[in-house]
Length: 237
Image (cartoon, rainbow, N blue to C red; front, side, top):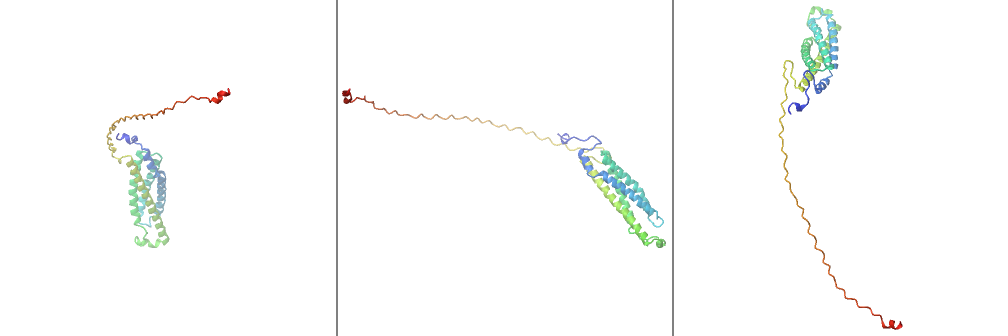
């Protein structure tokens, strides 16, 4: 009864088969690979924008994107490793790292969205003549691509966090820093029902009464008279 009756529990630090199945539904290796690709593309786009840092006024925000690339690479690598070797430690680590990545991605979305579309007439008017329309469109394209990649990264972080919490909830585990395990309440013992005693009913078989024998009345037969040969037959002899 109690916890033992609810199935075998996994050793400390390991996941049950149901938890591993839930975690693998997220496709952690695929999502981790996408994060690494996004990090590389964000790095390339940020470096491209920094090449014209003397023409744009928001290059400090782009430098922050370069720093966040390291965070994206770490998140993707940890997620891939957790998908290959799922364990309780790596699930918790993935959850914490993606919480940080989601915070950084949200902050960068706010910073870069302010500059879309790029308004060259609003900043540094002395440089307006040197910024032609094609350069402005190029900057808009780079910024829009960065924002799109950050949106995808934010979605991946949210999905990873939700699945990580679902895995921990199925195991009855709490977050990092809490060592106690939530114990399930023991099931109340079911009262034993005494078997109902059945009264034995003795049925006596009634012997059938013998049928009265049929009385056969004997009809007396009249005595047979002796046969007397006729006189004619005697005379012939």
